[in-house]
Amino acid sequence: MSNLPKERLRVGFVGSGFIAQFHLKSMVGVRNVDVVGVYSRKAENRAHFSAMVTELGLGACKSHETLESLLRDESVDAIWILSPNYTRLDTMRTIHAEVKAGRSRVFAVACEKPLARTIAEAREMLRLAQDAGLNHGYLENQVFSTPVLRGKEIVWRRAASTTGRPYLARAAEEHSGPHEAWFWQGDKQGGGVLSDMMCHSVEVARHLLTEPGAPRKSLRVKSVNGTVANLKWTRPHYADQLKQRYGSGVDYRNHPSEDFARATVALEDEEGNELMIEATTSWAYVGAGLRIQLELLGPEYAMEFNSLDTGLKIFMSRAVTGSEGEDLVEKQNAEQGLMPVLEDEAGIYGYTDENRHMTECFRKGETPLETFEDGLAVVEILMGLYRSAEIGETVRFPAPELEDYVPVVARHIS
Image (cartoon, rainbow, N blue to C red; front, side):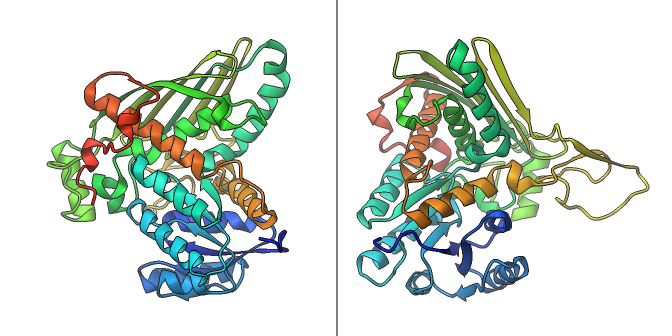
């Protein structure tokens, strides 16, 4: 756009659920942004979201009954796609159509992870954004996590500069299971925990291994090896729990998605140095709550982070009773005992800096650190891991056979 930079970026949200609300709360720490519109399927959810915008002082948010109405609102500059995985490509197609037809002034779009359920879908997301002339950002919050930002800066400036680049990144993310039914349904989500959470782990690891200022493509994926398993939720007691909680559409006795995944990714930098990523993800972890563990290792140094190793902890005895909640840590599994407290989840998890970065890039017309191209690269790795797990072999890149590949648990994607 010729009128950039804009003084303020006016954002419309597509989606009003858990992750949309997480993004919204983080925007309290973002300057030069207003949330001016929301579209989602349920009117009551839109009303609740709009009320949150007012309460947080983030602008006057209009509730829209259709996506087209949101896109045609002349006060909307950029769209944040935060709706379920199976809706994102159709959402992007509508954005493309409205912008190309001149019915929408939207000039930028950001999409929550993962970008798509398959490589074909991810390529189409990127093509549509480029064809419509949209600036695009891939919302991978762990890349912008405050420990990652600070840790990477120190390691590369002080250690890698004198003893050599890091060569091994480890990433793990675990919790006790997702919030909504569609996450558990392989066709709607695109897979199980590998699709849902490994997208975080491989990208934050790839980011940590990338030299500051270098493009992500400076690291070439050579091969991937993946393993998936059903450890907890296929056991009859827990499968019945899921059906009682989410209805007959979540049937883990007969149609499960994996609740554990492991990945090894071999890469090569521009000088031919071999690099490795080790990652694990699980929906079968029962602890205080969501646990993120990161490590970065090099010739003479190591960086470590554990999200549950918090500075603030609170103890509550058996006499302290109350309803279940997530007021101490996301995916909280208990309300008694010695509990870690994440006093700023939005900041520690990376949502605040992620949204600050996207807002400033879109407002100024600059290319974000994470774009749809990165989202596509992540999906390519994920599909390689699913294929590896299916055939029991390492998948070597380039792997053109993955272009039309669909994971086993998602093969009735329409």
